[in-house]
Length: 345
Ligand SMILES: NC(=O)c1ccc[n+]([C@@H]2O[C@H](COP(=O)([O-])OP(=O)(O)OC[C@H]3O[C@@H](n4cnc5c(N)ncnc54)[C@H](O)[C@@H]3O)[C@@H](O)[C@H]2O)c1
Ligand SMILES: [Zn+2]
Ligand SMILES: [Zn+2]
Image (cartoon, rainbow, N blue to C red; front, side):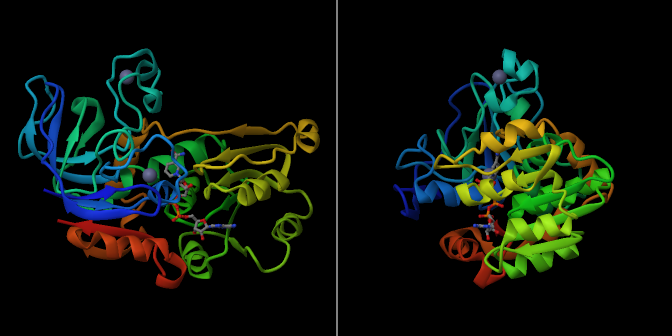
């Protein structure tokens, strides 16, 4: 098969690779029909993720069709259309039992990290019964690619950990696909204000179409002061960090109102300076996390009922074989006016 192979920081190639095979009876092989690129793949290529080794097939998002199912797989059979979760879950270990699938003893974030991922013609999915979702007939399969990772991530690690409530003022730093997913799902809770912060003017404009009430462009004046001014000096109830660099974490920690929540979603490759000398007296909570994807079924229902329309996040489409061009577009999102790029086989 062909696959996108990581060869070390800043190096990747679309090349030949042996087809994956069933290794355990709980595995399935999925033929990828649609996949995409995540901000985390960009972090990997920056050298921010230490667990990935050269030779690995990248990618942890996608939908496809079951090509072959292991003997112990009960819920899926050949020919089924499936949504692949970015998190693999055995379903039986203590962490799976409390829905902390991100920390499954035999799973977690494996795909495109410690086992070969979805930016390929075929992928092996371990613990298939708990790591795949059947696609209801008639659903827009392209849109469902947004449910592999970004929608559950924005919702679980941003909105739920941030405890967004009706009437809240919510600031989201980072208007990439993950920040946009947090924006779309924060609206479930009717916040009064949704402030999007980014340096990319196009993404901020798109954020307004998705329901942002205010936008702040980083690089034009003092971002923290602007947010303080917008909130009458009070600061925000929830700050969601969806970039993964020290500068954006710093914005979040400086705009909190007393009792606020700072929900860190970004993948960080460098340490940040935590201003506990200012924060200790503010009664704030800081949360972090890898997505558990325990809300995927719920989000599937909201998509099915039209409550959210994740297809609107797709800005560019490519054949899977042109994935290197797609990386170029996603990696230069501001110039290319890109959000999510969709690759189809
Ligand atoms: N915690 C998790 O489970 C999880 C899951 C998926 C993704 N992530 C992380 O979420 C983050 C966002 O992912 P994405 O796919 O939206 O990535 P992305 O790269 O498309 O988006 C990042 C956004 O940050 C903006 N940005 C960069 N520097 C900035 C600055 N100094 N100030 C303001 N904005 C700035 C960029 O313009 C861009 O719009 C990444 O760190 C990714 O690794 C975390
Ligand atoms: Zn991701
Ligand atoms: Zn488990």
